Image (cartoon, rainbow, N blue to C red; front, side, top):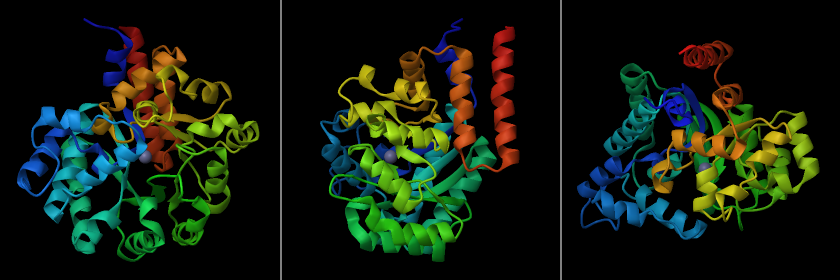
Length: 343
Ligand SMILES: [Zn+2]
């Protein structure tokens, strides 16, 4: 029987903090949706053709493919099936808790009524917890490329319509040409309503974007933060304030944020004492999953089982679970490590 690090990771209870709703749709889910809309979508319904379709050349291409999958989410039943299917895939990887980034603006703009959208994700959340033991929470994010109108609408959807599982407010999409500070008023409102601030920053643009996210948007965690290592003062700040980074190694490779995985700066982040979490971002689109990302990180960082368990604990610490939930999940991680070491 294999006792390798992959086997350890496969059974390790985990939390995931940076993973996108539509971007988590597995080929199985996407194929089913594409088949439903055959003749009315460019997305192939055949899983093998899908894999080819999902092979990226650059960040702009990724956004283009991502948006074409967004286009398959056309009614509330699509939303419910997608969300439930994503949770099912998480359960298979022993993900116990996930903060799933949802972009309700995209679906509502396409004609899904806002209340029906919220009911669909909430129904899936409750079913997933009951059926798979996966606890889901939502981050509603502004699709930055859609501009300030999308920010206004996302704030309305978060604050006026709302969903019981909503814990945070985010900002995704491309960074180039989409300055973070313009979104300050919307983050101010979300934070005043008790939502946590978790914008993407420093993925495809430099450390100044991370400073903007911290100063203008009150970021409590940084989505990616890959470029932070280029600014020693920023690294000090992130370490001092224990602001977690949501690191997504394979995503950074797929979108050419790094040219080779060996060049990923995760090691510098860990060596600087930052609170590093490992995440999958848009896993099937990048040909990965959270377990694979843990294996990639373990290799880059030279971790043994205790080290990998430490990464899992980091994600729990950086999550927006309450103290009881954190203690429970950390206890599961510790028990799993202890049992592994005994056998
Ligand atoms: Zn992301």
